[in-house]
Amino acid sequence: MWLGSGFELMKDGPRRPSHPEFMTSKVVPLERAHWLLKPAAFIQGTWSSPQDAADWFAGAVRGYAPSFASGREREASTLTDRFARVAEDVAGGEDVVGGWYLTGARFLSVSLIACDSHRFRPEFRCPQR
Image 1 (cartoon, rainbow, N blue to C red):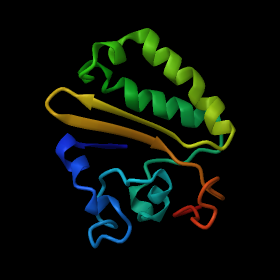
Image 2: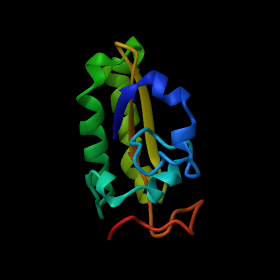
Image 3: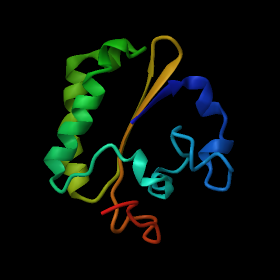
């Protein structure tokens, strides 16, 4: 999960693995699988159960939902629809990534990244077991 200034997203240098700040920057990488290149200390959790991963995702998002800049994104039905698909996607080996602009020019990104092996980047391994 990353919460920061929406303006940080416009600086794509630190979001690329070739940039010197990439390994220390917690800003969302340009490519989802690049999270797997980050230090293991950035990991906020691991789950073997798709439902446990989905529950973490939903809990992380719900905590910030009242601050979503978009009224439609704050609606309970929109959130419920979004969360209903998460466990199924994770069970299928898909990454699940959500991004929301919040009030105050902030941006929230919540990411569940599959590993061992990643569907599109099998050469990237999990940062930790």
